Image (cartoon, rainbow, N blue to C red; front, side, top):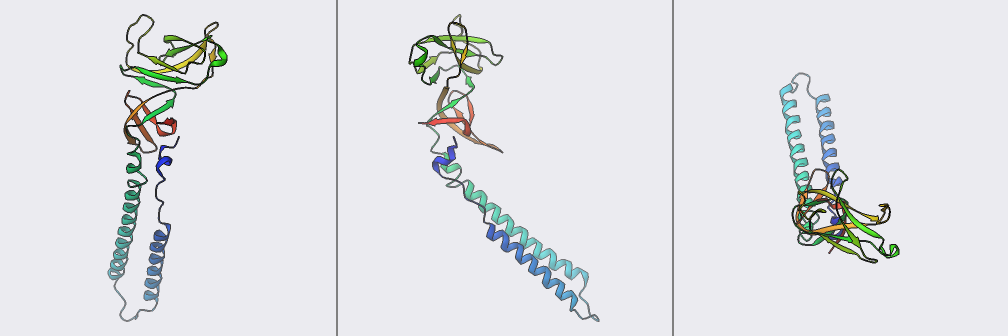
Length: 213
């Protein structure tokens, strides 16, 4: 899910302004060339004067482009950027895939499993794929809360875990959507993507979010 799309997109770059700067620079070069071609051969302009004119215009061009880039950044961090993401903080975000356990209970929401008539269970696996906990599921059950304990009732170490639905009879993995979630505490703007920090410690790319409540 593109979280930003909920609140509107970012402003685009002003191609017209950039084009105008480019045209002005080309005009200056043509004028400079004409000036060189038509100068008095008995009293030519010194080379340092040409260099000074070129340097002056180059500075103006760079300053103009810098101002345009600042405008773009301001727009990105305005209504279409950070301000837009502010409304995400404090909302409940659901995502599929791995989740971080930091000591708090984890709520898992499961897609419809009515057809399996209770012959399924939820298993929690560590990063090596070893099962650390499991819970039986009733037909149609859509939510399970895992308190972070293993088979012996001990709290597992804080780490990243995943969840699967398996048949009780033969341990066959069943392709069922499982989502975990928590309140969004923070929005992080990386170099290539936006990430959401959830209250349970999980950091999720915005593209992995399936539901916002």
